[in-house]
Length: 269
Ligand SMILES: Nc1ncnc2c1ncn2[C@@H]1O[C@H](COP(=O)(O)OP(=O)(O)OP(=O)(O)O)[C@@H](O)[C@H]1O
Image 1 (spheres, rainbow, N blue to C red):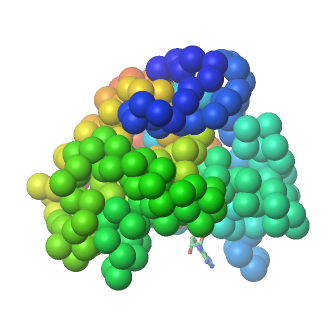
Image 2 (image 1 turned 180 degrees about the vertical axis):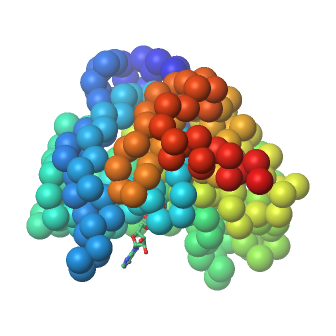
């Protein structure tokens, strides 16, 4: 796990986090007895998890095991029925619009679909949230966007339109856009699943470099070799529970439960 200094500023980009971050050893995300249902279907059945600053966690598991729902609860996209969720020591309270706005600034999320605004240039896509939400000047936001685009290897694409980019490039813009809000945690939900195989590597390399720089990452991934290489811990979710959790060498090398053994075997078939 990379360890960040006490305070990290956004000027050097790299700049994956900004502002004051909690002291080392303090969880950035603290999830306690979290339960989430859709109607009568209980999808998360009591999740307990502390995510430490600078930690990289890979979430793996069968389709429907609750991985995406967990990420969506952490960034406030989904409400939950029971338990508690704290981000940077603040409780996630859906009833407070102000608290939710603050949360959205702490927690970045990248999805399988890149969700860029098609009518805005790449640069404008990256600038949008900082100008609207953080009230940055156009000049500052453009400067930051240029630096972030350089950071993801797309310095020359500032004025391009999204449809002029490959899927891998669009996903890298989406990463730059998420970083522009200077999140303390980045949630990645199968961010390479929609890409042609030859484009997967360029996106994973960016994520890997963020991990090396100390970004806290929670990623749902089907890229097991990536999880093995980059994650500090892997979580195997099964039927809405954290079924196994530990270092990648343990989960991949010595799975304890039949469910994980079977899941890993299914990947080889
Ligand atoms: N908006 C929704 N409304 C109703 N049920 C939902 C909704 N979103 C997810 N579910 C259900 O919640 C369960 C968990 O879904 P989730 O997407 O979290 O699983 P997952 O592990 O991320 O799966 P996948 O790997 O296929 O994305 C599934 O049974 C799914 O059908």
